[in-house]
Image (cartoon, rainbow, N blue to C red; front, side):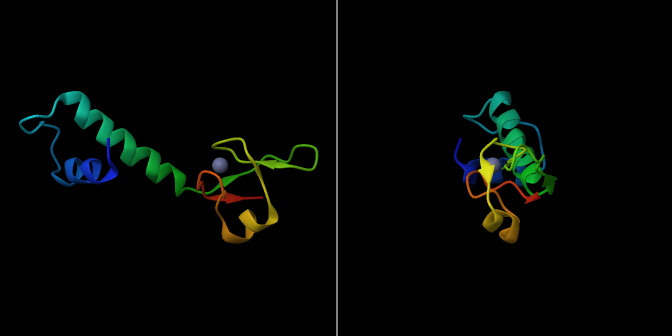
Length: 80
Ligand SMILES: [Zn+2]
């Protein structure tokens, strides 16, 4: 599902599908919204043998990521 479509569905503030949509489309739109919100909640990277793996995608995050506050791979809000 395109992000624009998910925004349109969530913006309608209803769980009733429009014509051409199904309940699973509504469910997918809300899942996309929740995943997006969770990425904006700061998560601490667990220190592991000199690396700080991203708590969302597992990629090793760098000092640059810590400075920008985002995993450069997935965009998760992080702190070291
Ligand atoms: Zn990540």
